[in-house]
Image 1: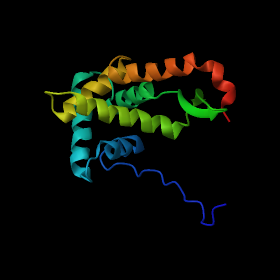
Image 2: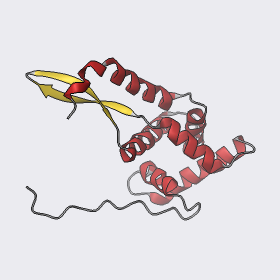
Image 3: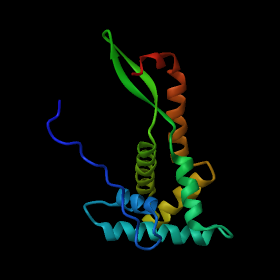
Image 4: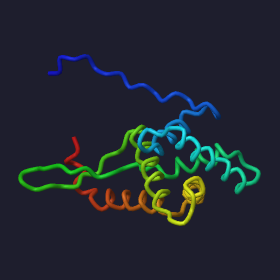
Length: 157
């Protein structure tokens, strides 16, 4: 049993420009080597790009809908039972859903070549908003894997 007290999870502080915790989390996931101002410039540039591309809708609403589309609902975890390893489908907690979605966004946006990072992030967000693109494919693959291993759901504990 742990002797130390349980650490408290601090929510991210809202970002300065929009006052949104989700945008602050996005900035933190885009950050590389501690360069937060560069990450903020990327995210704010992407939101401005989205505002130019999507007419008639608020850019922050488009981003939040896209992030909700990116979030996986279930994933598989390895469980070792009696010498065999099973891929057991488990539901994901909301904070992990957001973490996976933003991690995938960062990975796939940086994987786009020939485009500046703000534009790449904007394109990935717009693809996710329209339920297409690399992130949605990754989410669907995760869901398919969980669906295929549904028979092992009784090993979840």
